[in-house]
Image (cartoon, rainbow, N blue to C red; front, side, top):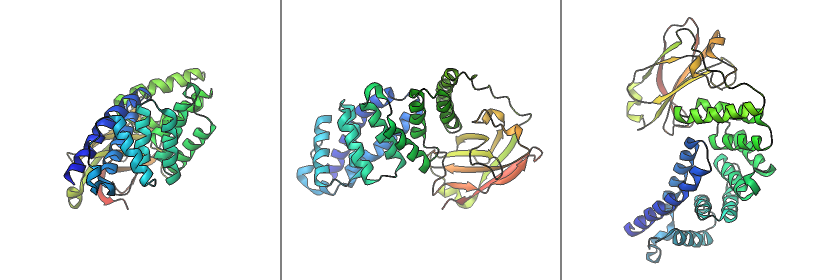
Length: 330
């Protein structure tokens, strides 16, 4: 079994090295490309370690090249075509070799096995665009992206690709509107390049650039603590989100800060500079609610297993809001 694990890891290193290179070229927002790379790496390791065929000593040979890795993967999927992660990996490997049509077809095979998965919908839409003339997202690809966002409204890649599709369709105002919520969840460096894309789209639509955020006087002071009972459950390298949103309104935050989940208690000041939306600022609201969440994945969308604090109502005169993370999201 050790030999197979070594072979699987070799496959991971070979394919990941080849695959990530074109992915960076096809994504202007580097943070979104990193997410795709991590997803691919997970799939590689799952496929390598999880294949029952690995128990056969004849299949323990480590791939010597990407072509060799692809051949082994094709043989495994011919033996068992119901492996979603295998088709995803094969799609990326084909793409690394410039075989875009085969990459698209492999992504379709994966999507047929899990037709409502947002990640697969975004990937299949991307592959269709890579095959199309001028890399345009056609109507079917746009439909896939809309389905992905219906299932997961803040899916980063789907939202990014949909904005590209809207801009290709001469709908720059819609593209900017699609991209703006991403500013709330990407890191500061990515936000700079993303804001440039948004402002370019707004310029095409005859709109002014996003306004430079002005801080609300004093801001909202928030102190976040972690319950001792959950200290042992704090994931390594987890991310803390501190969020203010409209009471009884949409889930989109009016202010959010993203920082490493360590060194509790953590003091945070939320103000208009933390607003992801130019049309709604924290200072415009008299009443709102404040919450905190620890995410192991770094994803702004709530997920099962996240550590959370119960949301607290607050207002401009609330003083310091104290939140205790003492819940595990079911």
